[in-house]
Length: 544
Image 1: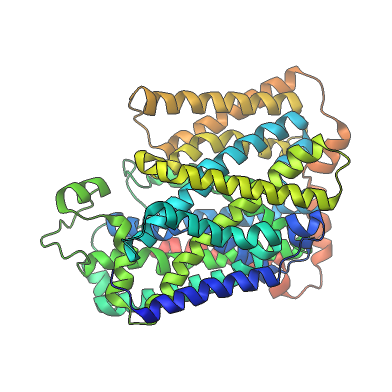
Image 2 (image 1 turned 120 degrees about the horizontal axis):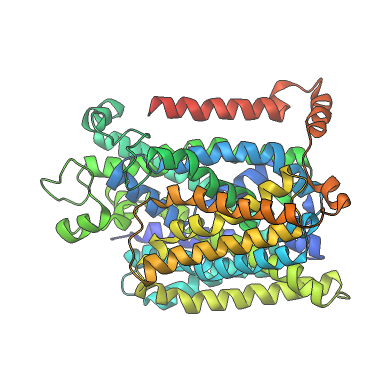
């Protein structure tokens, strides 16, 4: 990739500017300020922060790469997740904010007991460090390596870690969120510009549809044996993964907890839902267009769908390079620097979110329980040390990901095994009063055992599992929930006080209905939720 001095200058100026802005707006005078940004964020800030934290550099590469390989099928993960966001905003979010929790595992303790909290917290920390943070650094380094091939991979990882850590460790969540505002804006604008350049290059919408409209390339509903998103998995598997990511994941929910009120939290989630509908155009379609404009210069590329490994071995096409190649091929000097800034934004915002998540989990779920006399300043200090340690571990582990080619690629599959028991536990906890601490614990343990058996069978013993992971996820969740129900019914009644404070009832719906009377429609979260659901299904039926 031949990058001009002007583009490199824009990129460097952006990095320096984002660090300055984040540190300028950081708050760390007490634990609430450091870990939850003082709980005073408005809905636009919450929404933009959620968008930035959810879009990593691997998302940009993965979405455009999948667009090149299979068309728009990967968008099913996004539009189904938007429906999940609506459900989360309506039912779960108010309990999270009203309870005053710092972490997701903390909610499990309020509803069940500390054992469930420790279990979930440990699993989340482990995944955040060795999967999220390390994988983000590694995939980000792959991108930078394309721009500066002479620089050693390890030093690229160290520099990226230093950029994200410089403001997150010092300023906490408020620094991260304020940086996310700028980064999300750059990400949306930059990717939008690339989309319009790509669309112009292929000759507009009509030409795009004439080339790909006859096959499955522009269709969301795929056959049951489709390797990307089988139609049944779209309806019963993706909602589970989406709920885990948006409603149980500390990285995401921590930003919601920073909202100044339940209403701002809800509208922030709905805002990011509307933004996610545009990911089809700014992330996925440019990849498909890349296939139409012969991005890799390969003659006689088959018109049918071929998996990425075959494309690489047979035609020498590495689909991870689709997004960077589009940038260099289509954009003029100056705009290349802007899009590269967008890619760096995706990297640093995701890494920053992960650091803040692990710092909060360890400090509030473990250290604060160990040192009960620790004041806010000491907790902040422990949080900073934790972030630094996590960064060191992630930097040390990231280079080894190159030795495990499947680590990044099977991440979604691993989550599909680990997430269902957690999702099931939260659902039973909120909607079934009889679920108790014993049922929750054994439901979680049984779920992790099934997940371990599946992963060992497939990756350790090379036993083929004939079903798509999106079809396995609901089976694991139903099994875990069944254990929860059986054990709960065979043991004592749950604490009535915990049940009363942390379960949903129809009375809550009626109370909110009364509160919404007289509220203008565009400020009514239920109306906004309905509009978002309509928008989701409209897009689905357009590309059905």
